[in-house]
Image (cartoon, rainbow, N blue to C red; front, top):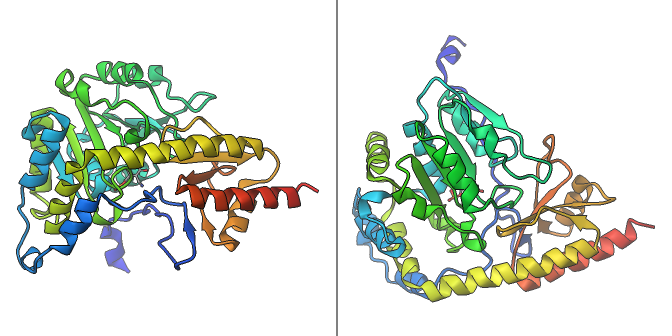
Length: 354
Ligand code: PMP
């Protein structure tokens, strides 16, 4: 068919499988195993039909101001979107318009290459070192922009702020995006650096540490000028990205800092315990600072364990891709969920070692 020549062809990102049934243990998409803050649920119950009948505020003022107050920045330094995927996609479209390739790690969030291809942005990947850390030297050459997650996905490897600053500082002529989807599980955010570097955009999400993946709330913080440019692109595509419930419920979540600290603290404690137990079962993994562990077993191939877990209704994430095809990305769930996982693994590994 002739018309196909004019189609924008895309190779889409494939998200983890959606929930299938009630009994499954879902450790495959890095959701939070705990409910959102109690105030969020109360506000949801109080929603009015007006919240559906009326358009939302196109500037998302309530949430933008709430985030600005929470993080101690100006509201002109905050941009919000429909999950950080929306924010990142908008940032690719806005900031990565040069002829030079953008740079990101070779093992990283696989959506980056999807957006680059979709928007026809040239890109090159930079190898991680033997311990799966970013090598800052690789980012000190001419490029059209830089993006990396910190902690990285799917490895969980965290880079100290000094390394982030080294990369941002070496790239003052392009925009550097630090994707901090998992920063609330123990890392130090690059946010303070936005006051010093006008080329730094820090992106975060309510999907993991605030237990609101279903509401789709993401945000970016940076220099006012960066944020203005992002807004111009957003308002050229869709004025009303954030829906009224998401704006109100996101604001509610920000009000309860104690609850946020409680659930992120619980996840970190569970993660550290599970690391020890996985090691005893013969797994190895880079030290994760995220809400997941990227583990491989010394004898049994990851693909085989993935299948066995699936048959037992325990879902983790597996990619049949070079370099990462012998690892499982296991989201940190509740203690009870992790105990079920560990008990199964113990029995399975014993059975398969005879
Ligand atoms: N960045 C990274 C590194 C991620 O792993 C994810 C989750 N898939 C996202 C961004 C997007 O998350 P969300 O759109 O739910 O904010």
